[in-house]
Image (tube, rainbow, N blue to C red):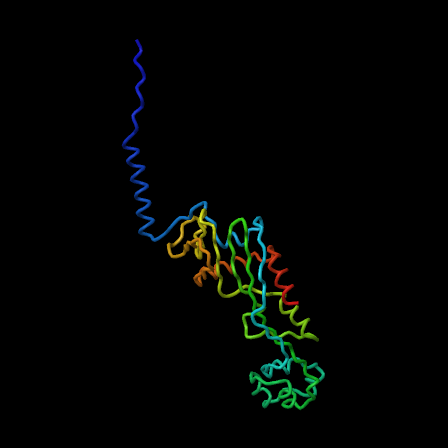
Length: 251
């Protein structure tokens, strides 16, 4: 008579090894100061550059605007704007070379060279700073970003009028500065990452920032703001809603 088949006993040795491995991995993770990313979490920089998300732009505005021809420039800039024919009749002298980096107006530069001021081409000095809010109703996420045409004090643009100077200056506008986040979804984790190992998906604990759901804007730490901006700048050409909103505002 055949004996009934007995239920298989679990391999306690293997189970113990598995548990030991899990505990050992957790210990290593804690000791190394690393964390793994929740696969269901929203990663801020990735979401902001995801073309599949229906992003909308709100409250795009200018905060500070400088468009003028009256600011001083180093003498070198004034001299370089001259026609070659004028440079030949008014060559650089040791006295002029000493003034190369001296800031001055077009009037002062013309007097120094010994020519009529109208022969100099004065550039437009353009510096416009603005902000906008990009938001997704589906994610209940809004992010306030800042933009400008240059990181310098001003950008010098040689055009006939101010309107053309502004358009030319914003061919290469950029995001910069602080980033503020408004997140109202308490059903899904929102995180920011400023350093990630692409091979292991593990990252230093200090590189992971959990952004809590709140009814108020929260300013990102500088390193996380920079990480978001770097990602936005890298993908900006594929995110035309930013360009459209900013160019409409400055015109």
